[in-house]
Length: 225
Image (cartoon, rainbow, N blue to C red; front, side, top):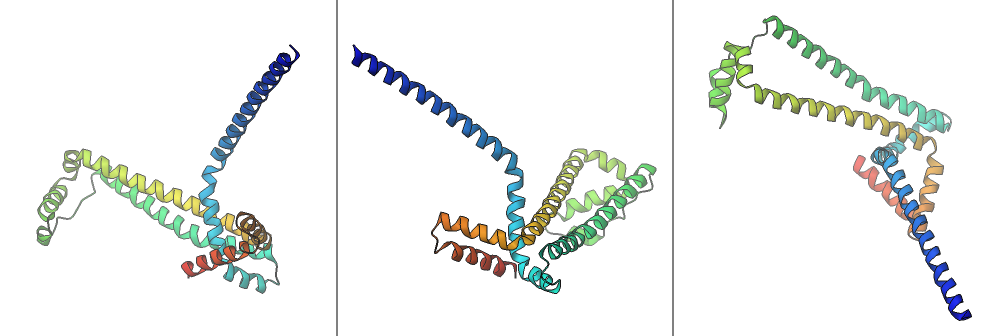
């Protein structure tokens, strides 16, 4: 009887432990999935931040030397200058495109927007010459009627243009964030390098970790140059 009771208690305890382990494992997977979902949008910008930081490190090192070895000041100046170089022309181009678009829209609504007729040489374009000439000629004669006639095609082209503009804007935003992240990495270049070496040493071996990190840095430098 005692053996049966002990066996029953053992089985019951094993079942309870198994259920608890399964619940804990499920909660752990849920937490890991939740954390990954949160950091997923930042993975690519962080990777690009690392790549940019490694690529510009020689220039950053020169700037740091010129600033008496002040890492944080050099990283701040690098970030501000790089962002200015990226954002300034982007804003200028965007303003120009918006102004042009508004001007064209206003002229179209006023009925003053006209398209010059095509040259006869357009007919000689391979494959599409006749079709382009015909549409172009119709648009130069009566733009409003032509746009209504090709309403479906115009909508598709408009959606494509909007999609490209949205994609370009998203890429620029991601690049801006990557530059800021690269500035943070450069401000803490030595600790970041040491931490990367430690991680690679654990993943590979104590002797190979530093070599792999240095090789990765040299590869990025060679591609960037």
